[in-house]
Length: 302
Image (tube, rainbow, N blue to C red):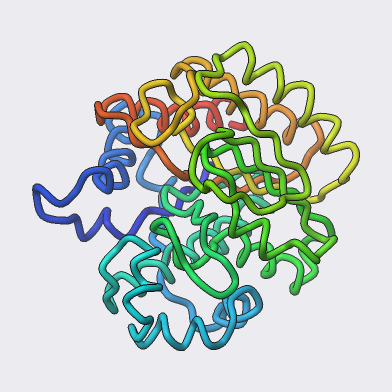
């Protein structure tokens, strides 16, 4: 069964006028239910789990967590995060992180699982930036490693923005291989060094993007030999994205997802998917592109 972690906003939506692009987290599960891709039992509501704090502390420094939890980050540093900091916002981030950890357990059981939130790959070990405070997939990777549920992990980051925080966190950890395929001239303008970075030129189309991925990913899996994969499935690679500079179509983005899932399934490697970015002007485009990831997982695995 496909199990999907709901974003906390699903039960506590923001007021009208303050929602875009956050409203996608509310609208996506409703769309999946409406069209019959998912049933209510596919979804679960993560909560804060104090037992998982040890994995958060394995990734993020004690000074940063103390300041984040007490909402005492100095304003100059807090501005990098992009959100006005509040206790409710930090609570939401901890819930999202726990959703990714729980999704890992479902992936081990069913082969694939998903988090409608997450993909907070700009969170560094000692600070947050670009709407990311806790690096959910990095924390979940530590959960798997510390509990001996995985020995070698591959992070496949296909968001249009480089996973700079993830690269920094694992720069000296051979147990986690970081792969980021992103827009060359997109944020962050000062890139970190992943284990493998593939910067794509502006306006890169479906054929160029998919050819690069198809040449790279199978060889990479054979090289790394992971027994768990994290997939960051941002749809900000679309030509319509306001924050991206690539030129992919919704159909091309779906083919990307199909290829990643097929590679994982063929090799019997569990995969956890965090949704990542998507900022097209038309919310219908965002929902359709994100929904394709879930539709594809259902079709291929179940």
